[in-house]
Picture 1 (cartoon, one colour):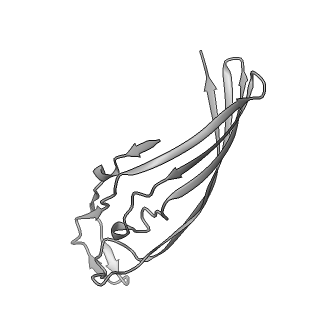
Picture 2 (cartoon, helix red, strand yellow):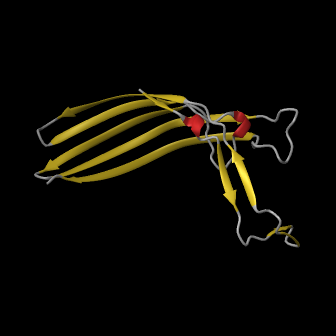
Length: 149
């Protein structure tokens, strides 16, 4: 079980240098010098469970599962750091040892998740969130080489 103190990530400050933005390709807007992207993320938990079985002294197979709570509130949800909500993941892996070298493979599947962020009555073009439907699923493959000396 993990607890992450996301609340410390309250904003991202961005500074622009020598930037000229144009509206419809005609009117230069070079007055923007800095911007703040508020995040206001909340603290979250992640619960993981996994196991490893040695088929032979050199070959291990692994399986795991996790639930990862979303830290992103609707009021700061954007496409820049999209988060479809709580995530559930299944992991499978294997490892093989050759003397001092170990090769590990991992496959991760994050189950499809979706989240709809709706406009509130105060929403306008400068609001700190972007309404819409956010969806995600992940297929990930990893390889890891370890050399012990």
